[in-house]
Length: 410
Image 1 (cartoon, rainbow, N blue to C red):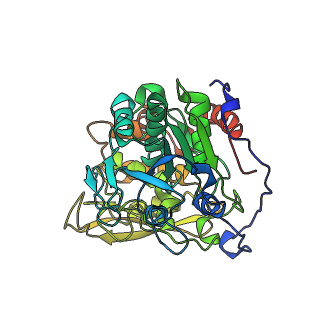
Image 2 (image 1 turned 90 degrees about the horizontal axis):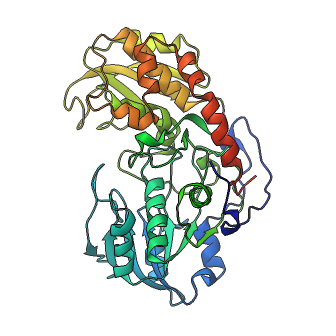
Image 3 (image 1 turned 135 degrees about the vertical axis):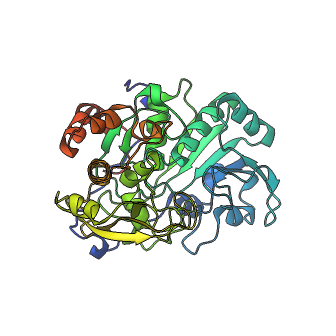
């Protein structure tokens, strides 16, 4: 990857790193989000600009007011439009859906749909909205296949095509920014669950990803400004800060879900339920015909930071709707030691060994999630968890070196 065009990127200040074996018990730092810092300086960054905001229900203040409502009521901001991603601006749509074009009843602002739009069609949406500056503020969960980071990428690309300025308001990576983990996407497997070659668990914030996208992947960089957080420590988990958690999507109800998601979302690429339709999506996994042997097999591996319990559940929608299935529930007991991607691979390997009915989705969706065919073909060939993890280490090391150039919090 090239490391050019860094002059376009916001300078990265130094910040101390706090380590804690139990981050939830660490002294709570005085964190301020990007929006809090933007508001505190009187919105000077947006002065004299017609503004549009890319956001969803997670774009809230500490007292859970939506930033669109706050800015719309403030004469210092000329807010003209809202742009909604997957699930929509107000969050009414399920996975794979959006809200379409409408006028927001609360503010009267026009809401434009960005979902599955990119390139020139999305640039035309920005042009039609009449805005000068596009602001992005969405809570990410730290996984490559969570689509909001590719909404960020697509909006940056489209803003460059439309000649618009782009501002990212930063929020914490809820599963920390300690390191990147997992396989790196191969470009021939690029989709909306992975546009560019980054690691499966990227360990970056939205503002850091924006800098990476601008410096490495966008053919025409966008005029970019990032409003950083203050007080964020890379080693701390979301609950260390006392911030409210608003589900970024319907099946991301808690920070606990985000913790396991980078690994267990891989079961979307199989015929095993990933727990959609339960109160613990991505923490519960199962299928008809699975029994206690799966939990026993994966527990026997002694994976760091997590235990596995034999579990039975009946999803209310999605795979096995209304049927009782057997499987496992993940119980993370040491978040600092837990590696979600390694754990997800171990669960795939053991599920295939203990359950004769295990199968990949017929469209090889697992390849889109992992970023190549390597994970699937290795597991099919009987590789161990350690063999599969070892296979991506060289690519991961290369990504980590590039990633380091764009980190804002050190």
